[in-house]
Image (tube, rainbow, N blue to C red; front, side):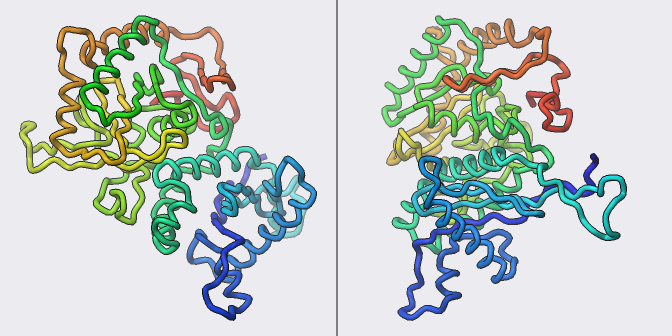
Length: 420
């Protein structure tokens, strides 16, 4: 049945039912408004905001009385809307509201002008996955919401959300909902054991030279080859840096709907979010996050280098600073200590150390031909059958190698290939 209007986003809001007004004798409206941390669209009538938040808060309290281990309300369907609810932190509730697709009445039945809604047009599990990803990325870049409020303020949280949430929702394409929102895994790069040992030695050598380096990972063509991150932290980083709706690319953050420009306000404490911001990759060895070499005509340096090193908050690894260096098809992900002074001189030293061949086999220049050769032996051979494989133990995600592989085989729509 063809839909005459697609699924669309109706609202997104965050509320905390434990918040109370500061005034000694608040009105009922003030009590309701105090609970709303953030609401999009901000132009929605205040009564609509109060009604939506009050409805979900009441249903959460009601279902909590008999929900048991499953927890309280997670989803709600009305004739026109689908609600997905996530308790991201204790007393911090995130809600995504989608408007059902409008479909023509069956057999031409129905009153003239009457709208019919496809209440099965979007899966609850997909909306839950989007909410989890939204919170995971926010926590990665800005830490837990309650911790942020304690250190900063509720007002600064609102300003931050005003930048982060619209930018994140811009990446959510309702016409492309499907299984890849739910499969949060890695595309692993196939290399031999000896190559993994060489990569390990290279990263150990790098850490000896730069003691503030705490964690590192190496990807090739956006496929994970080596990491010493905790698996949970690596999943969030991988999802943010290279993965998008089943496709993976080292240049994800350079492309729409990402591709935001790094600004002074997006630096730690600046008030804006670092989400989706990165330098354009223009050379074979370039920083995605770190330092931008401003070049004029003929590649001659034009002005001082610009430094952009976003803060990150790892679930198991704690706070740090994120640097991402690319060399040909290799992406090197580095986490430095929160207190490290990462200026242009140090970042240039990191680049030179990683990319300059020293004859010991422990540099990106020497590792690249080995990794690329072993990767090509496996990944450039077409598979006889089309398939998607996901391993829940190590979160390996594997798509069949075919020149015309389409993600539409899983009903997600479109005909885009699996890699960019």
